[in-house]
Length: 466
Ligand code: DOR
Picture (cartoon, rainbow, N blue to C red):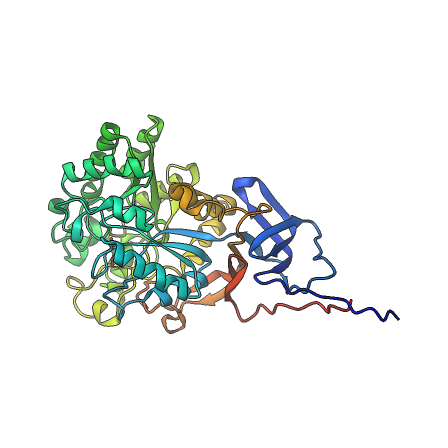
């Protein structure tokens, strides 16, 4: 027996994930094997990887699980400052981690809005303490989100915003949008517009069509979105810059974006899990397309969202857009609300769906129905959004050696039921309440640090003497 003492290192933010199905479609990585993370970075991947004998690193058995780059959400609402009863940066960042997101971009419809350096700093400070996903703030296009004067875009860019948006509201004035695109060009940051012609949508609380007539609710037509998508594409042609179209929901919008891309315009777009998986029938309480009369769940305010849930033809076109790359990214538009904001009349209920923790399972439903393959799904949740963000997300959407270890591990087959009280988000407003889901995030790492772990995951520590 040797009498020499061995020195064993326990490097921080390190883990060995073994026997997982490792998928990083942007780097053509797709095999069953191991991934070693040391000091927050991917050290190596391979069929069988061992940590060096002088290090003590927790080992996670990922047999039967998918290991991929961490998801990046281009669009969520974290409500702080101002609406902490709905969500805080801490609760939102932890809910994001539970949903497999390692980076989320938060929209500026807070109070005060994100239109000054001080609010950007506040968000970055709160985010750093959250212990969840990374949080990247999006700055306002207009001062106070009033749609009148441009915000101090240079100051916001310098403070660290990753894009500009007045989301929740459109940039209605064409000249303001034109100037925002012109300015954003010099910072290399996208302008993310919420496309909605407020004249056309006025009073609309759901999609205009068969179901709105059935329910006697005022509808907002697809044209309210499409007319502004067309306008923004025309402005982009005029100005250059980078246009990103938020929560696209109609077949006509997908077609306009497809044509713009064919003409080489630098436009990108996102669609949400709810617009990709649910139709307006949900507002009538139907779980599937149906021509029958009202269900007992009719007027479900949790299905009230902007833009509204649309028709099955729109859903098909969106899925096709995700498949073909016309839609670059899937973004949650996580819009948490307090229960009281969603209680009462459909007409007066708040708009939005709490989506960070149900996104993956909803989308895996499309994979099981053979409407989307899992590699494309991962692409649109990782490198797709990373490309929209450019430098802000550099290095965090890859499983290559040297990359930042932002990693999501999920079980595509694990079953669970959506119980609002079990969600980490303060927003319990989901139309999926009580629904059985398949597919669950098991482990989320941000820079190699565990920010979420399902209770079924038990990292083992190898015996250092072996
Ligand atoms: O449904 C929505 N809710 N759509 C938006 O654009 C804004 C969001 C919110 O802030 O609640």
